[in-house]
Length: 259
Ligand code: NDP
Ligand code: 8X3
Image (tube, rainbow, N blue to C red):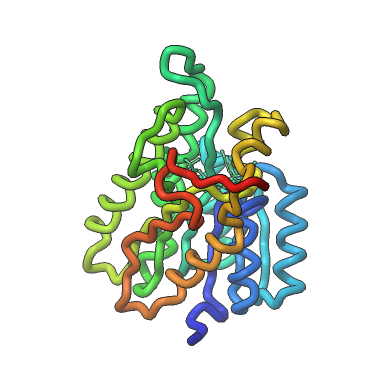
């Protein structure tokens, strides 16, 4: 595989766990410079250490809450001071909160999902684009979900926030046409990360039931797709990737074995 990412500056949001952490590690394998953000700085520091050990050109961390405009803008100022440019932006921070039907839904859960999964992408893209526009060939990859394409019961606000991600991606793709910047969305199905622990508020039994009898995607599978898309030549834009584990044919069509 041609390595077009060596020495490039890659910014990953939600890099403290799951897809974001694994994407950072795989970008490190290719010798990228890394700008990593999330709210848990201790976890970020561990990921940065892994990245340094795996060959990152450099790995820098800064606290980031994508739900807070001031935090996002401070993060972008830090990125500007640290790197001066961004070549690859991975808008990954986010997640799901709750599985209640609309009639039982909680404002705090709905708001958290729209804040991170939709508004967070808008805020981070707005703040980081000035660091990308002088450098044609850069790429923005937003992390969507099968949930943004197919709604399911108990997922109203999460699905809606990921459908918003899809529209934001398409609008940005149109807005940046002619700049040499690329925009795409990576849309996974069920993957075993901390996602379900967050969604199910730490209920281990319920989390285990989500993955019972299935070999779901893991963070490495999704990171491979993200890094592959980012590593295409500048004239190639991967607009979208939809990926699910073999056992999942739709959000609610999951073949479960005995396991
Ligand atoms: P994890 O829970 O393992 O990781 C989520 C990451 O997002 C963490 O690093 C977390 O960091 C960060 N994050 C969450 N909210 C914020 C915030 N407000 N500001 C900054 N960082 C934030 O889950 P995944 O890796 O699975 O999820 C990553 C993305 O992939 C999410 O957008 C999720 O919706 C999406 N996705 C997940 C799927 C799955 O089944 N796992 C399938 C399809 C899409 P911290 O808490 O330290 O801030
Ligand atoms: C997470 C995947 O199937 O739980 O985005 O909605 S799913």
